[in-house]
Image 1: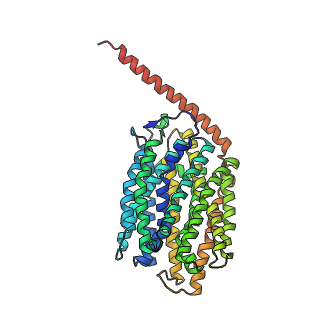
Image 2 (image 1 turned 180 degrees about the vertical axis):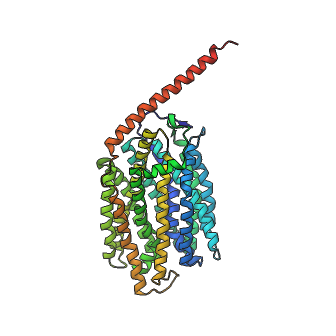
Image 3 (image 1 turned 60 degrees about the vertical axis):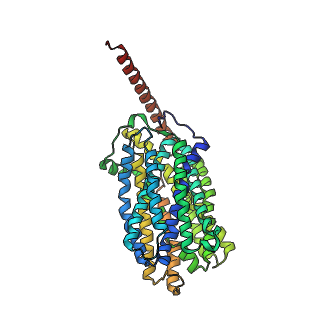
Length: 470
């Protein structure tokens, strides 16, 4: 049942953990989609690199146009179950069906099949991620508590990613190739309804009293894009998606073919990379509370350049050095999505104060769209560049030194440039803890007056009915 919040409250850890539980399957699916599925379709199912890259690009370009419409629809939703809870429940079966059709796909599928089911999967993931992000913004209203809540969500997502990586390793020889992808698929399909049910039954939903009936339009969409704070966040989110997105698409190719690690070793390295994000999400959430969100993300961008560059210094096939190297990159890169999402919630408060309109869903649609653009560009362009330099992704193929060098340059140095641009967007950021505290003070006062007026109106209505002669 939806609840109305009239003041900023610190959420209890059990509520936060229950709410964040949906990040387990969402993060697991996202990791498999970014790292394992492209190689699965190219190496196991017989599709060409160009076909796989084109399919992911086409789907992302189509899907990203849906996010603003989904965001507006969520902000318009009114039900006795809440505003965002029904959408979270709706997204689960869509993702489950598409996951089955993609993870269990057999050799001989066409590019059309891949495009169709990828589109369904991305639509479902969009519904889940938008609903969770917007719900979190209305659930945690304090500047520092938001860093904590989004940090927990990120940490739970890391646990899901680690579990999905450990699954094929735990299966041993049966977890390699297509069997490993199938096992990952069943893991996500089974876990998703359990976590969505836990979140839906345990977590309260707060709806601001004076904005229950506000309607968003396309004009509102462009007004939000033009806001200086939101324009910075959109720019930064895009470039910080381009950086890690490039490494995700090329990870298996880079470590297996360019650096000489076995398939099982690449899985182990990825486990350490993702696991480091668990510590990283807690650290960056803490640091954001200490020095401010914008300073924390600038710090992370600079640190990313050092940790990513160090991967080229590590000698090939040296696990003892590659493990700490990958952990350092995972630790740093966990800051980007976490802090940006918390900052969007702060902007949403400022928008509501200035306009009197609830635009949380639409604001998060803007940054999820940039994530999709980033993924589309990285998969499509990276695979296209590898195709140009003559890199062959087929299982057991022998590549030229030039092709390997092109792979290394794409993996290591392109992400650093992207992330640097993203971090630079936060120089001179104005919506800090002091400014947000004033925004929340004014919002809380206005919400209290609106709730009081609504209560008096209902009491007056009862009195009129009681005093009316029969």
